[in-house]
Length: 379
Ligand code: AMP
Image (cartoon, rainbow, N blue to C red; front, side):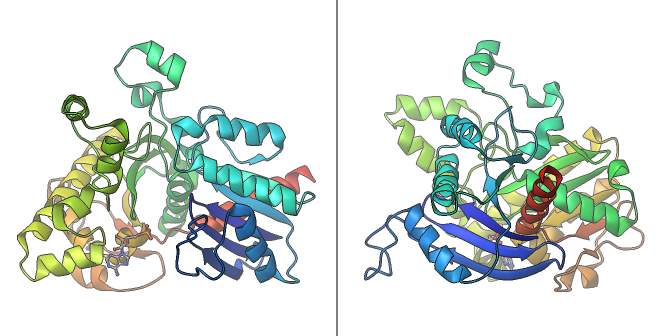
């Protein structure tokens, strides 16, 4: 099947056309600055998602499309697997907007724009939260009054699920294990970052919670902090919007080092800049603590897996994290860790108690396969 994969952000739209049999990317592109008339291409601004879809349509030319797969960030408690989209499903995704105000509205705009342009084309939603549907309640509950969960849906959901699921299957394959007997810890380290505890192939805990803010130190997000800080800031006169901006867009590596790009942080640390060294120490320490905790949660991991932009490319950051896990008997092979490759690979030493892997993620491929699978089962 030929699947158009859409990852629609508030001001951007990423697309790929994949042939799921040949496992091939036929076309890909990124449309940016949607709705921002003052953006770069001022002569031809992309006014909205419908206009962006016109550009995608032009790029497709004569290419046949059998179905569309959308990355949808928040599936709430209802969506625990990919679903065929109809009006009711679109409205249900829209009702989750308050839980993911930056993401779900854009996803809905993408879905509606496709329905308007190609009404006959089957569309499938693949949810970032879905893989975490198997979290036990003791892992997803916050210790706050039940009413907040019942009335507002305040609980831990987890994100990056498509990537964690794909990467954990690839890691199990690499180790020659059946997926359902894989116990491991997967660290998805991109601009957003999360780590997941996988037991018998299922997610049993993950570092992101109610929103993608909880957990690790990220490019511009703080990750875990004492919630009283928010109350304190509120009392100091910060508005909800200011606190939201502060924690989501002005924190993390950016706040600690002045850059949200791991390459620059590593470079600056290497040239002796203390703020950058501190940023790496805070981020790697936070991640190592989570990995130690998840090693316990899964009853002993059979592998530690790194993925996404930083996980796949930053040998320096991986080395910092693994060095902090020496108590678990983890040892890197520094030559293997330094290898640059697009393939899944082992980077631990032969005497490491637990193998450490780098496994490239491919969310578009996972979305295309889930979409093709669902559409062919239904037709
Ligand atoms: P992603 O969100 O998965 O695209 O990952 C983005 C992050 O990956 C950014 O922090 C980049 O700095 C980081 N990254 C990409 N390439 C490299 C590299 N060669 N070395 C270190 N970090 C990298």
